[in-house]
Amino acid sequence: GAVVSQHPSRVICKSGTSVKIECRSLDFQATTMFWYRQFPKKSLMLMATSNEGSKATYEQGVEKDKFLINHASLTLSTLTVTSAHPEDSSFYICSARGLQGRQETQYFGPGTRLLVL
Amino acid sequence: LAKTTQPISMDSYEGQEVNITCSHNNIATNDYITWYQQFPSQGPRFIIQGYKTKVTNEVASLFIPADRKSSTLSLPRVSLSDTAVYYCLVGTWGSSASKIIFGSGTRLSIRP
Image (spheres, each protein chain N blue to C red):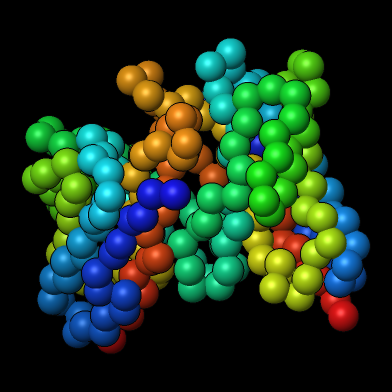
């Protein structure tokens, strides 16, 4: 199956700083990537849809100026958490669509654990 | 967007077959059904995907009745390492792709 990577796998930062998370599709091109966040023992919550070459589409309640998404190429999307605060601490997961056999499906990255102190 | 409903949790024992059923009454004509497995602090892992009838791969089978309003993930001879959360998702792919919204998932616990 297709592979999606994320970097870093975990990050600790001070309140007020910005953190960038990278999501890469390693062996396929992804015109669309998605960003999710997940709190402990909760399901994944979709934050935004990232489209290559255009602006991201954010879900209701997600601040676009706080969670900056850039999809500069067909294999890379980045999520920048600006002016991070402790309540932004969470598990961030990206996903991208790729082929499983002859069918398209959605593949997920390993996730990035963000802890804001 | 199709909403899915799954049992919150299930328990079973090693070596047993586990069947997890998902309801998706509002599934659209072009929607596929996909199941993912998630371990703590990891991203969801693709298990199986299907559109109708039965799909089988090396780890699971997926049964979809004719009306497609539900689906059942079947895990044969589970082991302790199958303890995880399982998500049933429905959506379209390709040029008319829909965004994928996660439901609550099913927390499967396997005991020795």
